[in-house]
Length: 299
Image 1 (cartoon, rainbow, N blue to C red):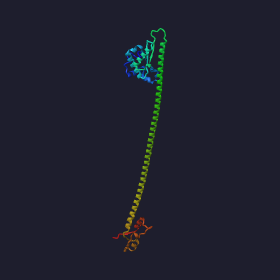
Image 2: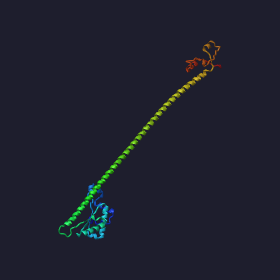
Image 3: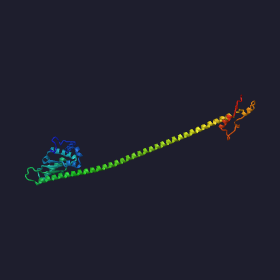
Image 4: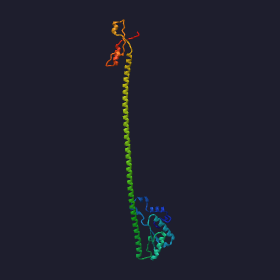
């Protein structure tokens, strides 16, 4: 990792949040990074972190502790680092296996996660063993990178499918909520229309009641007017009849002319008056009263 990070960055003492910030800075602006399509994001990611540990560092506990701290931090970030034991100075299989075990114990991983790589140092000719070792290392890194990208693609696909399912459920829920809202609005509209119809019916009923009341009042007033007229007429008739029932002295004009000294007085009442149609009309009574000369009995 040395040479890949600035000199002022201490990978050993970094906290998890500092590591996250550091990795985001390595990828550039994280906000801009998130706006990129998934394929471009995947291309910018670190696919396989590779730790190169020299064969000589196996015996240095301080170096192993530093490497183990960085290894655990990167592992917590979701990566699967590859550890390469390099600068192996011996070709003895037993020595290489022992070195792998020591390194695996220091990092807390399995021995199979550690590869041994041989490099050219003082050789003057190509070595098939060294080339084979490096080629196997590159092939392993390539396989791990493919596994990482395939896993990321599968995870992204699953996330998209889950998002699509969630969106579909959300749309169904929104449609159901919209239907409920529309039904509530329809019910409210029906309720308002019903209330309006009821108010109109009440208004018409009130107007009809008022109209009938006015008609009944007019009929009552007409009846009262007729009754009053009849009562008034009856009072006139009764008064006239009462007056005509009193005995009076009447002097016929002809008799008065023929016998000026003798006054012929006759007792008469309403029963002796001529009756028209069985009953004496008011007009007849008035006419007859005007034709009969009345003499004051006290004169």
